Length: 119
Image 1 (cartoon, helix red, strand yellow):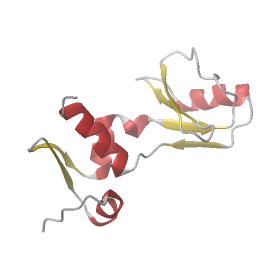
Image 2 (cartoon, helix red, strand yellow):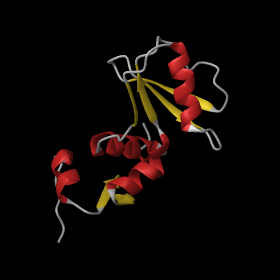
Image 3 (cartoon, one colour):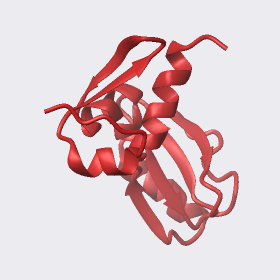
């Protein structure tokens, strides 16, 4: 069965596999988790609590930005232990939350389409 909708929250809840079309061609296909892997989002951590700037200079850790509530998103590079990132955050101040960031389908869709369609 094919289900087509621009209501991506609904698509994410109902569909096992998703296809994204941009500029008339299929640009991404897979489960939401597979699309997260493709986007590199599967390894992203969100850490809430320590003061701004705490991850700057951590070797092998890319700072992706803040989410607007004070939490910082970071992507540990290959071989970087997420527990080391947590220890660095704890050394900078109390950590209220430490979790894998799971972007919603709306963000995955936006990122895929921006990559595929020239401005």
